[in-house]
Length: 186
Image (cartoon, rainbow, N blue to C red; front, side, top):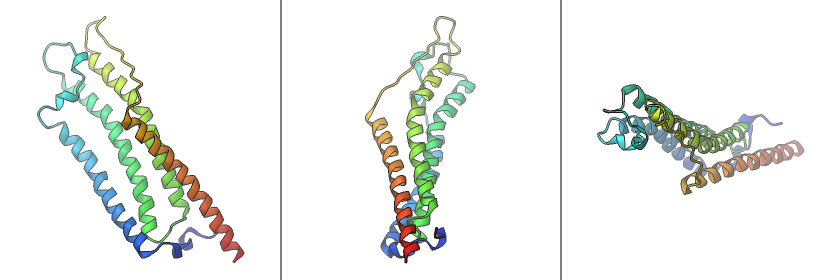
């Protein structure tokens, strides 16, 4: 096998390098903005709308521990999205460096796709845990276990995108194998 550092730099045109570099910068910006905006959104008055009020029956406002638990649980989905962007950014930086068919790109694409699918599979679990947490302080008989397994357009789009990204990683791995065979012949 040809070393990754010398792998097919001729296929990466200056236009592709520039596009990959710009995309990597954009991905980095979005990676940084997601946790910042997620944190700020909880500081803005009115964020309580995202709290499952219909399951919370205690008198008075929710405790800080309850709100922190909901914040952490919902933050898991944001963290997984940041990890998806991290792996895509790694791939884009390698392409901007001139490596189109490297092993790193295959691994990065595969992880990005897997994490995107996992994020959508985690969503109903997180929502169930949020409702359990919100109703945990209710008296016996008023606690709620709500399991929602729905297929929204956002969920379907993310699942399809994740599967397509995984398939692209296998396609890239095959292209890498063919490129290695061609390099060995020449």
